Image (cartoon, rainbow, N blue to C red; front, side, top):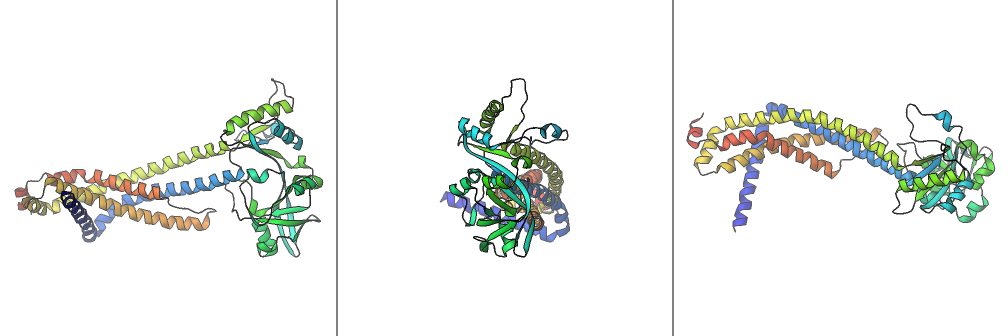
Length: 421
């Protein structure tokens, strides 16, 4: 019974505080709006930045996963880049060979899947339809085990296709759509490039554009390496070897093993530097995390200033509110209201005011996500954790802003307060 009475009391305080906050907003619209504007802008800044960064990180993480989770790309090029990138040194390095991939398959104890990859660009056509700039990928057996893509219609290559180098291909969704009108019509048809013809075995599920310049499967035609090598010279197209670690093996350990295997394979002495690079895909994630961390700090700095201004505005509202309601406070205390009840009512009213400002900020962020989602190559979303963070900030700011005015109200002498006009 006592618990039920306590809950009724708490709900009554909450309801009264909420009504007072709405009344303040209704009676003094301009004053309250201007005071809450700082809260709105602060929440808009921080939640807008966090939502955009989270969405971007999700997109890039998916793109990195598409390159191969826990994978090493052995290439003559170093993927780190930088303003002083010694490209003249890397361009002289020997290209990767299929025989090197086969040697790694025999020697590596930490690798689960290994594939050879080479690509070029070509113009593809079907009847009167033509599509320029299509990626032509030449791959070996384990490629689809390392890469994240699914066959939407038709089938993938089988062992016989790989071994015999048949003139078959698997094409991207955009290629099928542009050349055949309806992508599902592509399976079993022929597709042409450079006077040569390929039969379409399957169509890859639509992927969307990549943010990190990875594999563009939507605009791709994949063929087996044996077929590719019968048409082109792989050495002229910067081939590389993709190696995926076994489950539970960190990519750094695989990278160290592959460095040793490649140095042994290429008979490099201890004094000679590597003429290859084992590029760890995970390093890109670390670099991206550091960039996003700096952007988040900037967003928090801007939002913090706005929230500070908003907190002062809310505190000013509460000081004015306490002064305007002095006689009401005295009457409540004379009728038996406890000081703690008065304190909680004003603190909750301050918190509700901040929540209203925060909700307006969240609404503006939602409008921003709709606008950006229409122009950016990835959707912007507001995670529930971000909404919870926004409301938590508002509640904390409300309590901090209202603590002094609420304390003043709670300590008032009822007789003196009633006499105040």
